[in-house]
Structures are given as C-alpha cells and as structure tokens.
Image (cartoon, rainbow over all chains, first blue to last red; front, top):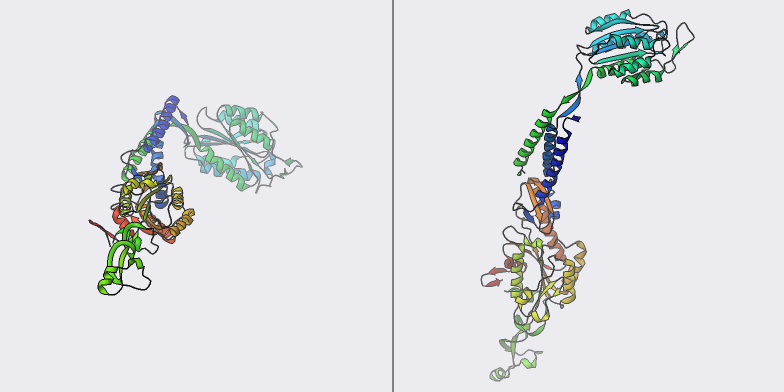
Length: 306
Length: 275
C-alpha cells in the first residue's frame, strides 16, 4: 500500500496512539460511576466476567480511528484486477525434439493440447496469438480476441523438425504485441536455444517493457532420443529460468501432459489478472465510520459508550 | 439472657474468680439468693447462724458466683470493610464491637487486639477506651493479629473476631484451632454486600477497596456464578471456624448488634440483648 500524504498518516497515527493512551488513562481514573467492591481478585475469580468485551470495544474504536486516519492519508492499494484487454502470445517449440514420446502422445501434441485448453479458459476480451518456432519463428495466429479462431489455427502448427530458435520466437512476439496494455509471452519448449537471436537479450528487453515471459520446460528428466537421430532431447532449465527471471515472469517444469496442462492453467490465472493501485480513501473512511458507529451502538447496547 | 450470660453458660466458660458481677451460677460471691438446709460439704463460712438459731437446723446462705470476664475483640478495619450496599460493613462491625464490650460489667476487662499489640492494661477497665485502641496500619494483618491474641490474652478469654477474612488463607487453620482451644472464640464473618444480588449489568467499571480495577461485561451467567461463589465462600469460612471450635455468626451490614446476638442464638430488643 502506498499513501499520498505520509505526513497526515504519521500525525494521524500519533493521534490514534495518544487517544489509546489517554483512553486507558481516563478509563482508570476514579469516577463517581465506579462501583467499589471489597476484593476485585475475588470478584474476577467468582464471576469470571468477560473482560474481552470492553477490550474489544476499545480496540474497535482504535481501529476505526486508524481507518479514518488512513482514509485522509490518500491510501492506494495494489489489488488484482481482471484483465479484459490483455494480449498473450504462446510460443510453441516445433523443433525435432518435440516429437519425442516421453510425454504422451508426443511433446508437440501435449503442448498443442495444453495451449488449446489455455486459450479456451482465457477471459473474454483477452487477445491470444500463436507463434511456432524451430529453426525460425513464424506467426501461426496473430493476436485475436476470437478464441475459437486461434484454437482453429493450432492445427496449422508444423510438425516437429529443425533447430530451436527461442530468441527469434521471443523477438517476433515482442514485435507483434501492442505497445501498451497487459502483455504476456508464454514459451513452451523442450530444448536449448541453438540458433538465431540471444533469448536472454530479448527477455531483458521484454522485462524492461513490462512484458513478462512465462517459460514452461516440457520433458521427463531422463529425456528421450529425438526420433530418427541419436541426439538426446535435453532442457536447459537454467536458461529457461533465466529468461523468466529477466523478464519478470516465472518458470515451470512439466514432465507429462497433466503437468503441462496444470502449468498453463496456472499461467492462465496469473495472466488473466493484473495488479493495479486503487484509491482506497473512500473505503477506509467509510470502514472507519462504520467501525465507529458499530462500536458506539455496541457500547450503548451493553451499557456504556465513551 | 445477655451476651455475658450466654458466655458464662458456655461449656468452656472462662472463670476468673474475683469481685466481678454475679453470674447465674451459684457459688462464691456476695449476692444473696436464698437460704437452704445445710448439706454436708457446704462451706461453714456460708452458714447463717441467725437463721440456724431461728429454725433450729443448720441453714446455708446461697450466693451467686462472682466472675470477672476478659472480653477481647479483633476488628478488621481495612478498606475492604469500608464498602457496603447501603453503608460500610465496618459500621456494622463497630456496632457489634460496642455491643460486645457493652456486655462488660463490674471488673470485666475489655481488650482490643491488633497486629501491633493489645489495649494497655490501664485502659482495659473502660470499654470506651478499649474501643479507641486501633491498629496503626490500614491493612489487616490477620496472621500477626491472631498470633498477638494467642500470645497476649489470658487463657479463657472470650475473644470476638470480626472481619471479611479475605486474608485468612488455609495455613492459618492451625492458628485458629490453637485459639479455639485456648479461648472462648466467636467469629463474625462479614456478609458480602452483594450476597443477595449482584447490582451490576452490562459493561461495568469495578474498583477494589484495597486496590485493583477492572472493566468487564457482566451478564446473567456472571451474576449467577458470582452469587454461587459468594455463598460457597461464606459457607466455607463458617465451616473452617467451626472446625477450629469457634462460635460463628454472620455480620450483616444492616445491624451489627443483631449479628453478634445471632451468633449466640439471641436477639436484640430495644432494652438490650435477650434470649
């Protein structure tokens, strides 16, 4: 939370603390309303009166005053707000290693299926697009708020073959994304960047422009041979984690189709909300006023009010 | 019957033969009651020779026994006794004390016992002077007071102790028993001012007479629990004193004299305490 008028807040809090101290001191001062009894410890043991009720009322007064003080300090709360006009590019690796079957039925099919579920669950108004990359990157579906059209374009993703140009895919996504708004890149890959632009540079550029890259590494720990070759399909997890960190995103590992689906669903929840500062002055002021009214009425109904 | 007579009728009545007031018991004294035929063993000094000459048989003069009592009293004058529903409990305590010392006649001695000591001998013959002897401290030091009583009072003393007994912890039961064995002891336990009903409801501020303060919510549940605890405490105190061989009574705020009389199974009339 940030406040527009910290001096007001400071002075107000000092006032609240003084009020609390003064309240306690005044409460302890002997008054004509006090009842005298022979032995207070005996009374407390015998009747076991509810001492928490006056304390709770006092705390309610102090909290209500504190809320009012916050209200006049111009507080801004950073709250999650649903994204209605966000843009999400899903970059799907179509290199030769994606045909590996350690993830059922293949890594490429599992990625396509998870991407479909992700797009289906995206909020209305969110624009999604597909980029596939192997030795080069190409746009399969440009950003479009028509989710069904994008899902239909998933079938146009080429069969796995070739190298892994992660940097090119990220660069293409950066070029295709709008200049403003809530923008996210999701990278699904199983390999190591071995051609094209340096992904780290692109990730840093994206991070500087508030575009987080969420990376998902797909494949079992043992990996698998790339069909038709003797090459082993390995994941450079550190690199993927580095791209995510550099851009303000996150990294997830999926060893099977379910995990991949879950990872994208989680990303869906993350990318469909944004955190925005909201002016909470009125809320605090109203909350403080309601708290004071509640404390007054409660105190009045149980026999006492300050 | 007066409190003095009740004390003398008591099973362990204190006897200090001397020139006190006559008692209801026949024995050595000066107050003539009747003449009766001589019985073997009668003191020959009691033979009324004139009556013997008139009747022709030995006649003995029957006189009432003279006894001087020692009436001692402990009164808790601490702040906890200065509260009450309509008036301070201490007022009732002082009334009971006045009645107690008011029972003294002739050469009876009246002694106030405090934690600091007892009424000086020169003042013991005057109930008023004994009443004026009070503790230096506001605090009622029950342990020291009871020990002073045991050390300073002569055996057979009629001892009256009045207080709310909040300070009487279990460790003092032996002391109570020792006093009960040595003296004719009577305890008046100040009845809690709220014994008949807790006059509190809702959020209350309560201040202790001897310190302490609380703010709390008191509802029906708390009222019932308090009443029960107050009754239990009074019963427990009465039982503890009775087990220590003390005569017991309850000091009621409304009437201290009647409370004292009640401990002896007597009642107060305008003319004095009666049986």
